[in-house]
Length: 159
Image 1 (cartoon, rainbow, N blue to C red):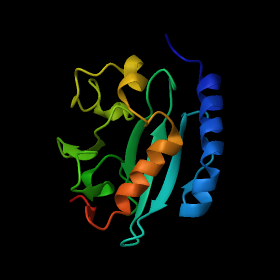
Image 2: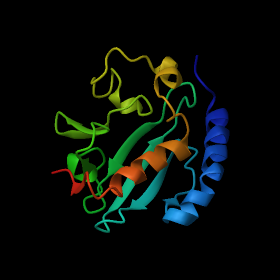
Image 3: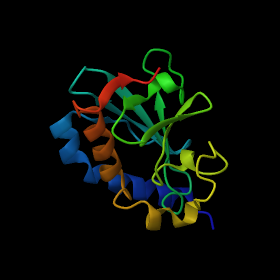
Image 4: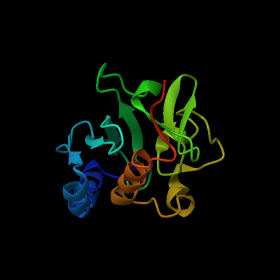
């Protein structure tokens, strides 16, 4: 079943509102919602090296399907390339496949079959049951920010 775009947009607006305290505390900048293309971006800066990351969230069919999360390179503007992604050696959350970066977690549709195909066994309609606590925007952003602010495991951008 497909979620009507106005429901996806309303759901995302509520999730963005719930992030406002963290936006102020951590200097995250969330763009206005692009209702036509059903996407928004988040600008986030590593407290370690000052690298800015641009995270693109596509939300068609949300919340039935997870966000399609990708990173956009601030220098080239290209989306999905490895150089747009953070390099983190503490776990496989930020991963690479076929020359692309990917968030390897059920909260990101890009890790599923039909996208990068890393997890052909995952089913998008079941994503909330397998995503642990990463079932809303604030939790996802907090997880990304925690990793790019971890002096032990964060190592700049992927190359």
